[in-house]
Image (cartoon, rainbow, N blue to C red; front, side, top):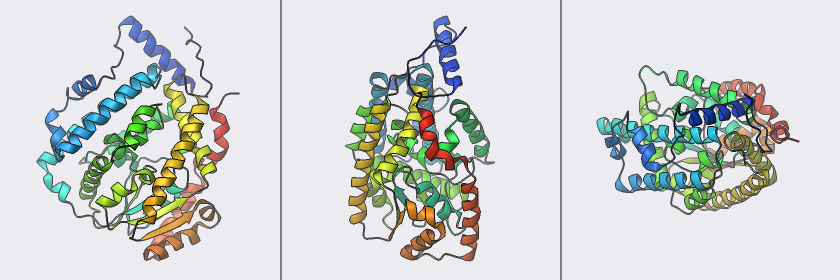
Length: 398
């Protein structure tokens, strides 16, 4: 039986159509139930395998209340605004149950091992900038330096430590399924399960809007989040960083951290890491916005049949302007070590751009660092991500 025709205008994998049809058929036949997006139902589902006592492990009353409010607001926006298709609803349910389950398991760990939260950390290096502004390239070049530490993709999305560490294996399965649903995935971001990557998963675990506004249309949740103090989110982020550093034994090395959301929330991050060094990556707002549109349109088309390119363009332009204002204000008031790098300069001569960052931050650019960076640069130049600027047109059907 053919899948029903859909009226969306953005391209997506045929697997999305098939899965939507299979899910609808299964719900109608009573083979499985329609996934709930009610906060209490999600919480109950997560607690089937994890004790709810983990909610307060290592967290104060404010942080617990903030998470609960975030969950309620996000669920309300998903039901009222996101226009999720069957696959989108199933993915949203799965993501939020997983987030709650991770949160409870981490809390249980911190109850048992409170010493993890006392891990002494070297001051981090924060790569700050808009998405699509070259932050990934700067981040991975700095992370290649053996004097620095970085978060792996698998650490970000599977933050509970394991011994032996099978997290890279679990991440292989995650990326394989994501690539099945999204043939453009590797043109949007160069992934690798054990490769240095942004801490987006850590912010997602704390229900920061950044991981969700890129895949679902949830403007009320985004606006509410933008108006709130994000400090509870970053306290959870700091707990995850301390735990990861203790488990991997690299707390003595400066961690190179990068998520585009930092541009929006920089004062909160600097409150927790007052000795941090900051690297600001910049690119023209028009280029950033156009590239961000391709990412968001690509993601939203998978989970909604009503993804609206005009709305996505307007929202991306608004978001870019907001982050630019907040980032500029935070950097202007920052008395600590800071450096800047322009996207075009990085394109023209990455080595000179990186050397400039090291000079401004008063870091030692060693031969070992340079050798590792050349390997990373060679790897990046062979990535499918280099085709991203040409891929945007492929997300829209003509």
